[in-house]
Length: 125
Image (cartoon, rainbow, N blue to C red):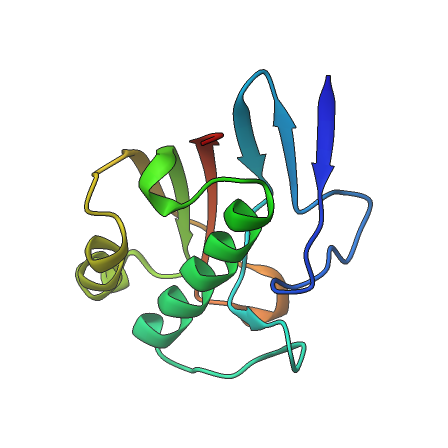
């Protein structure tokens, strides 16, 4: 059985997809970009600020699905500029003390000119 996850505490999907799906005891999130759910805008121009907003958005989606950042198994991270990796990593490490598996790649562009996007797979609590 699949359950669709939706919360107003994270940016609404802007296309034909869900914020997350719960299936077989796992939560699969869609990629989150650093949009403030209250304003609908990217407010930070730095990789650090954008990374914080992305992870806060992911945390809200996971919470709505009955999980949390401490239950994340795998992250996939997309950076507009791989040279931001060290700064991104410092912020990321502050949220993921459990050290999930991770892939991190540079991409040519992200929606709304974002510097970072992250998707996760997590266990339901």
